[in-house]
Length: 156
Image 1 (cartoon, one colour):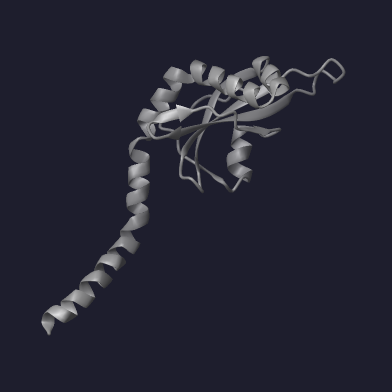
Image 2 (image 1 turned 60 degrees about the vertical axis):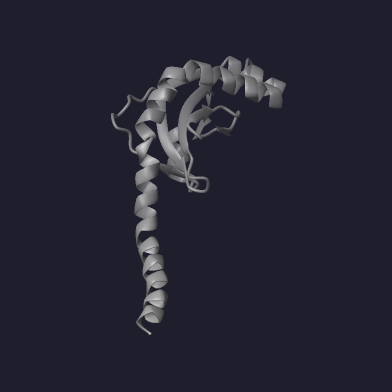
């Protein structure tokens, strides 16, 4: 009779333990690779930016040309997608005004790079008219990931 009670209590205890430890363990394992991912992004950044523009150009030729002429900022905002749990690098980009626009009308956008299965991807995902810090602050889909060392902000 005791083994029947044990057989019923054991699954309940395992389930309760899983419910309690699931989130902290998931966060621990997600953060385990963050430093390596950051270093990899910094080393491959130029190639990733080129891949981003090429990928965007395949989707929309005019956008690809516009992004080729864009000025990429040095700052990187690190975030995590709340839905997919993927680690993200958000980079601010600004575009010079068109000839018919006033000179102070520079437009901004955010290039989104995803870290997935041990590597960075540049699929041409972007947030138009949004800076990276605004994307993390306003967009509930992205949560900030604290940087190990703060990086300087460069907005022109």
